[in-house]
Amino acid sequence: MKIAVLYHSGYGHTAKLAQFVAQGAEAVDGAKAELFALGDEALDWDALAAADAIIFGSPTYNGSISARFKAMMEESTRNAWIPKRWVNKIAAGFTNSGAMHGDKLNSLTTMALFAAQQGMIWVGLDVFPGKTDEELNRIGGWLGAMAQSDDAPADVTPIQSDLDTAAYLGTRVAQITAQFLRGQQ
Image (cartoon, rainbow, N blue to C red; front, side):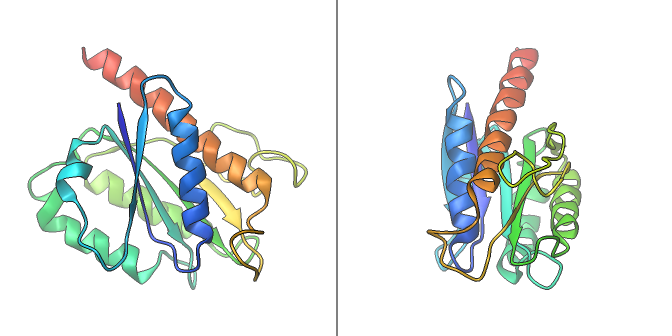
C-alpha cells in the first residue's frame, strides 16, 4: 500500500508535519509512505498516480494555501485531472500557520475541494478536540490536521501534540486505505 505525502513548506514547519504524517502512515502494516516536497524539482506525476492515497499539506499563508501548492493544483490539470489519474484514491490534508486559528480551515477546505474535483475520497479526523495543549487535535479541526507554529525554527515548533495529530492523520489514512483496497478485491 503506497501513501504519498505531497506538501509545500516555506520555513520547515510543514515539512516537519509531513514527516510525522508519513511516520503515522507507516505504523500500519503494509503501508509505505513517500514524501513529495513541492520545490524547484519537477514533480513525479507517475509516482503519485501509482499511490493508493495522497495526503496533501500546505502552510496557511494569508488565510489560504501557499502559492506553490496552488501552482501544483493548476499543474495537475494536465497531469492528473484530465487523464483521471487520481480518481478513487484516498485523500486527506494538513496545514500549519503562525496564528492559532490563522484561517487554516480555508486551506483544508481548498484541499478537500481539490480532491473532490480529482474524484478522490476525502478522509478527515475522527478525534474530538483536545482540551489541553497535550491532547490530540488541540486546535479542533475535523477536516484535517491543523498545527500552529510560533515564530521560531522548525526544530522547536509546532508542539508535540500537533505533531502527534499529524501522525494520527497518517495512521487513519493508511487504515482507511487498507479497508478500501480490501473492499476492491
